[in-house]
Length: 554
Image 1 (cartoon, one colour):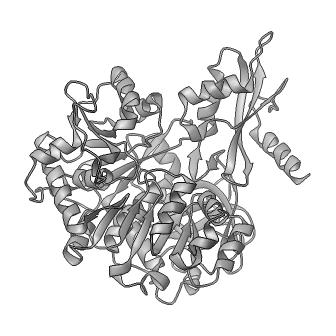
Image 2: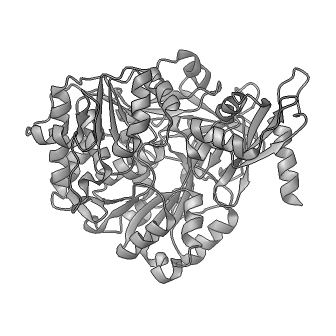
Image 3: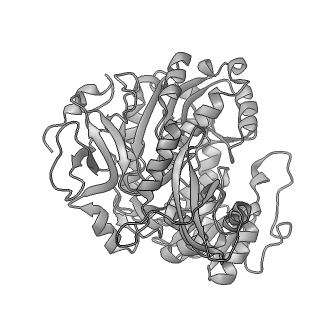
């Protein structure tokens, strides 16, 4: 695409094109360790690890994993919350040429089984609180190596755990014990190409079965540089010695992986690690922190934060340097509140398949309420007709967002059919529908997919429907996302009971809790005699959504 009219909206010090270094992403850690060896890289409940110490831990762990036989191309599952063990394992695996498979710590054994099988995991790094789920998983499938740690192992004052104290199964390994035995900090000799796969990010498929987006080293490097350059207007004014980032977005999520974990290495920023979201704990933590240069987050969290009774007393308007919101649209009211506080912010749009980035509002420049902004440097965006996907639509006309550029994934892991369906001639067909105004700003209108975004998590309704269908008293089930002031959307399920059977909402919710991660469990259940269907008998979610929207307007 020759013409990129959106460049005129870029902030004064954001480049229109970037020269990306052809390096593996773990070299960003080496860069930070050499530039600011004594600066704190990770702050975890007050315990600190410097960039130099982190680099040494990563090299020792890489050599320990290498000694276990982990080699280039092996898939290693990281099943951890935000804690020091995650960056140590992440950069160690990448240093060996391994591929990190990101796994949500909240996943149930059946969810994990699907992902472990799809990716062909050779190794799994997990933690104490998830051990019951991993024991169940390992009864169902064979994972050659399981390495476990305790979340508290890097908090001073807590006794370190051991294989014995965690009561690990025979043959399972302990994270700390592996590190202790490994003293070499030599960089493993591995040949790298920028196109090598680095991370597999699981995302929902059209069939409801998650598929693994393969993100390469060049995708990650491009994402980090694009995000860093976009933040230039404010971040570049903060001396590197003072730079911090609130590491609350989960590392296992595409967004957290780029704009927290890898961004902090390139920008030599201290990560203040938060392993779980609890608003009161977060407010206590913010009370102890002098400033946060960069706070990437989701609208749900911003809402909780600025509405908290302690918000004003904490002086959040002074503490927060740049707020970045993604994963779901920010409500107009919320944008106004952030503006009133004088906090610079940028709202954006991306997918796992686009390394979590793609389109955003300028940090200093023109922002339009309700708009996701303009395309990132080197990212071409077209809006094409929803049916054929070939014709570019006119300004103001809804079209499917398609994107092309250095952020776009290589494809889906071992899934040529899904890859061919979503990637055509290098263009990623997102399934999201938007309009473009005369100035080139984009506005999300709808989704071709039925995905629900609750609290920043992507939820695929079909997965919930499948679980509900398994209940012996359920004849039909369908779930949709309905607007929720706190989570953005929440899950509502509609149920038709089997003739002669009676089931309560509480029973169904309890049934789902056993089989789904907590954020996927329906919060609301409505019983019906029948569900709206098309002539061929397909349940029409659209009608249910329209009914809910009509109710909300009353």
